[in-house]
Amino acid sequence: MKRALLVAIASGCTSVGAFQRAETLPPRAMEASIETSLQLTVGRDTFTSVPMSGVRGRFGLSDRADLTVRLGPIGLEVQPKFMLTARDARVIVSLAPSLGGTFVAPNNLFGGALHVSLPVYVGVALANGHQLVVVPRLHDAVTTLSAGQVGGTVNVLSIGGAVGLALALGKIELVPDVGVLVPLTTTTWRSDLPTGTALGSAKIAVQSNLTFSFRSQR
Image (cartoon, rainbow, N blue to C red):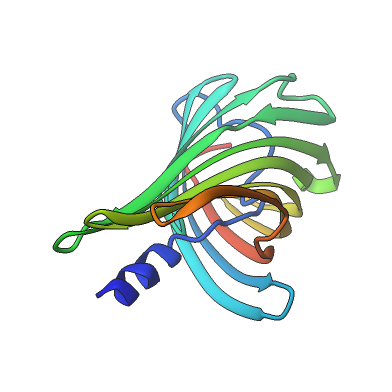
């Protein structure tokens, strides 16, 4: 049972990418998307690959704000986006903080993962409505597992980013991108051991993504 719980929480792994344009949706516009990803995790002596997928809905709230609700690798995620520049600027900058997570609780066990991310979207206008998207980000992930009086929590603070192309094809948009997430610190709390913080320690994640988006309007 403990192994099954660990596998369930591991499926809510950190995801990194651009996935969308830098600008917000216009008011009352809607966008539905399918995200496909392949993540490579690299440690000192390990290398694994994990295919992932997700779906999302994005909704225009005002001329400079929209809201994304995503169901994907980290569970349920909510991401508002705030555009800091004019919509017709050649270089668009937006701030898009996100909060997501998942949990399971079979019998007397509990496992959960919480992810907080602060990406900055920078979009550079290209010909024919396409856009180069660069997304640096700060990411924090907390994972916890407990069984009665025994348990532990791991917090990983990471820095990373993504580079991609938003290809405008009418109401359909394709966004291929590549992202990377590098751990800065890993802090562990365990009921049977002292608390400790290590630099790096966790695995580096490299992820390729392809997003298909369908918009109600531009």
